[in-house]
Length: 129
Image (cartoon, rainbow, N blue to C red; front, side, top):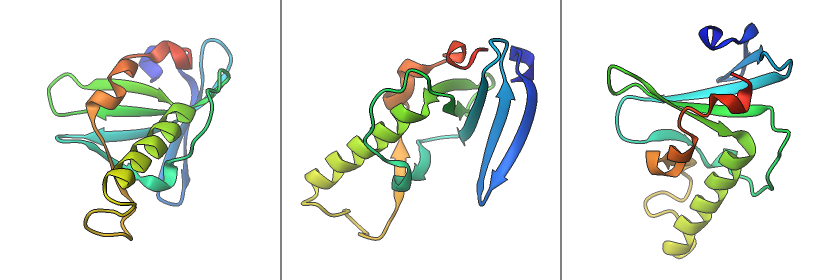
């Protein structure tokens, strides 16, 4: 991120979650959470799912990193969009399985496939980079 122009970069750890906070060239402060994968899908929790509206002033993002090849791919996804996407996909999944998880009703696991976030590939300009 520093090579893209981020300033005042710091990592903040809250529980098991690590967030990168930085100031961009546009003067705004952004918060970024990263998710990396070497194969398959990215893994997260349904706890992040929440139906919400577009936030045009969003300053929180998830950056998904695909490290499965020599040149990593990056997907810069607004937090409001990711929360909504998780909520909608989980609701669809439950509807397809009679309102229950297929194997374990207590599981919080949620997989995110590349096709769901491909529109956000290299969208660094959203965070002023």
